[in-house]
Amino acid sequence: MRRSPLVIAAVLAAVVIVGVVLARRASHRTAVVTTGPGGGTSLGGPTAPGDLVIRMLDVGQGDATLITNGGSVALVDGGPDQNALGARLDALGLGHDTTIDVVVLSHAHADHYMGLRELFASRRRLKVRYVFENRDASTNRTLATLRDSIIARARRGELTYRDSDDPCGDGRPVCTITMRGGARLEVVRPDPSSKDPNDRSTAVKIVAADSSRFTMWLAGDAEREELAWFDQVGYPTQPGMRADVLKADHHGSCNGVTAHYLAEVHPRRVLVSVGAENDYGHMHEQAKAAYRAAGVPWYRTDRNGTITVRVPAAGGAFTVTPEHPGESLDGQSDRASTSGECRSMTGDEAPNAQRPRRRRRP
Image (cartoon, rainbow, N blue to C red):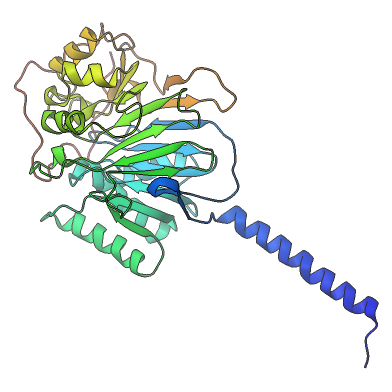
C-alpha cells in the first residue's frame, strides 16, 4: 500500500526526535575523551560551570583527596581502608553507579592504595576512566591484585591506564587534565632516579579555571630528596610549585618539609592527612615548627575531620572548611604529637590501616 508523503514525513520526524533525546541522555551520562593541546587531556562533554571543590577525606592514617568540578570527579589516593573510603563516597552521593574520571595513585604504599580497591568492587558499579600510577615493583599481593583489575579493565577498553613516569605517553614530564568546569589537574612525574617509594611519589597540582585565583599542590609522601628534585628540575609550568594550599607531604612527617620548599610553594594554608594517635608521631613537631616559622596555619584530619576547600565559580576568595572546627587553625595551640625520632614509613606498612583509632579531641 502506498503511503502518503504526510505519513512518511511524520515517521521521519518521530525518528529524529527520538534520536535527539537519546543523544542528549547519552551525553549527560558520559563524556567524550579528547586529546587536549600540549599533550593534555580534556574530560570532554558539555562545559558545566561549577565550584572547584577539594575534599581531604578523613580516612585515618593515609591519604585520599577528592576533587570535583563541573561534573568531573577525580581522586588522588584512596587511604588505608576501603571501608573508610566507601563510607566517605557514600556520604557524598558518589558510592554507586557513578563515574570517577581520574584516579591518581601517588606511590606504592598501602596507606595510599588499599582504599582504592573499593572503586573496583563489583557491588559499587563505578566507572573509572583514567588511572595514573608509577607502576613501581612491589611484592604486595593486594597491590598486585588491584593492578591486575585495572589492567583487565584497560584491556577491555573500559579505562586508560597510564604510567606516571610518562603521564601523557609522549615524554612530557607533566600531563594536564582539564575538568568539565575548567579546572585543571597537572599530573607530574616522580623523581626517576630515586629508589625510595616515598621519593617516587607522583605529584598533582590542582589549578582553578582562572589560574590566578587558586592552586593546590599535592606530592604524596615526597621527602627531602624528591622535594629537592622538584626544585632542581624546575617544575615546568608557571608559576611552578607555588600554591595557595599545600597538602603536607608524608602526613606532616619531619622529613616531609624544608624551609626552602615552603619558600618555593609559599602556601597560605596547609592540610595534613593524618590518623589519630598514629604510630609514627605524625604530625611531627619539626614539621609544626617549619610551618610556624613560615607563618602558615594548618588543619589536620585527625582533629578536624574531612577538610573542604571551595573555590566559587562566581568569583571571590577560596574557603577552607573543616568538618570539625578545632584548635589548630593558627597552629599555635596544636599540642605536641611526639618528641620521638624522625623516621620514614618503609615497605608496605600502613599503621592503623584496618582499625582507625578514635579521634582524639582537644
